[in-house]
Image (cartoon, rainbow, N blue to C red):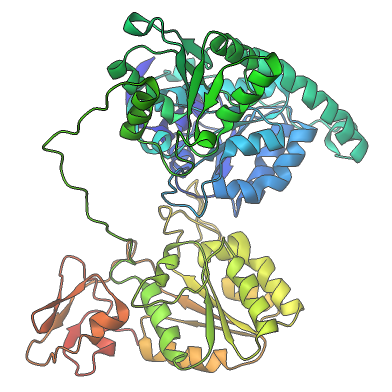
Length: 606
């Protein structure tokens, strides 16, 4: 063993490697992304790694590997679990031969997600056990235990880190390479009675699943991942306790150091719930406060245990208004809640407490081609009745002023369905659906097929910046390279659209403003489904050379460059526009729209 300073996601990845993982696949999604990237960086010979086209495909890949006795890890964020749920639910029923760990990183806050859904709930829905780490070290240990448990019981197992576990750093005790588990898969063995999921087999396996989960609840009650810290010292007679899990346990332990050693129950396996350990904790207490993020999973489980075993302990938490029902817990919010619950004096804030940080909303980068794409569509459709259906990615930021070009944003690929519905019900509306290049492959293709088949009329705008930008510039089928560094055939979005039946597909550089506007006007006027691919590389990856300059003698102070495109590289100083040379990339969009040609330089897009 040795110590390394690791991000939580890196610790999880190194734990998977130490467990002898044979295959890792997934789809990028904050806060989970670095797990797969770290495995790819450190993978032993023979370990296969890929960014799959979406989470459903990744889950099926991992399931197939586990059918053959391999240890497989599939990674995603909580939103991705929705996409992967179809194969996951069936894998729960049919089981696996090797170890299958489903890593789903939840996002309390939410910090970078559409929802605050709780994977612990999904675990109970899928009847799959879940490990809920409270630290990077525990995540490293838990993923190895999860593989062993999956193999022992022949079932998928969840690992559910949250944002602070995934992205926090700590010194981690990790195994040396000679201590790693070596896994040699047996390979797939044909047995249609086991691997073909007929209704009768599902019925029989459902019975076995319920029996198995009863045994797991007992095993988890004896597991060191679920434990009780007794009252000590000045708190030795305390009849109030704290029940917690996940990263909230870390906050609770900090509060325990300050407030005194109150009784504490730590739940590391919220499903199947360790009832035996809970009964042991509750039987001598009058009240218990549950501290957890997202849903009241521990709280409701303890209420159930009290009813089942006739315990009189009062359970408090989210459902009683003692804890917030949404958002992240913090060290201070947990400490305040515990002190109030225990009847202790509140800690006075320090007099030198710094002021709150100013709110800084996210914006498109200076020089981002998406800004030019949105602006071209906005200019082309000025004065017309329109709907602009957005999507999940950097381009969601097109909703901000002054662009104001995202009327809807639901989930990946949903803009196509919304645009189609509007086109059928409001034929006088010019309908647009925006989607990124990575999202196109992940979830947009069926929507285009549906639109062509059902004769919708809208314009698909593919914002192709040749990467998966928002989650850290991962490759996808259109980039021509894989996560293992292989150079492969670049799949053409244009050819896919034409193969589906979209007759008009045009590709244009959005930073050529005049041509982009003309293309949108002409193509959008056509009937049926048509597509424009705005193709220009992400400015972070392919930073243009040069900067624009503003001639103060020519600038008339009209603010059009600032008022219409909202580039963070432009600002106003007194009566003239000025350029921030640290941000400007020389994309030249501002120079193309300046009414008096006061802006010069940058890259010319002919």
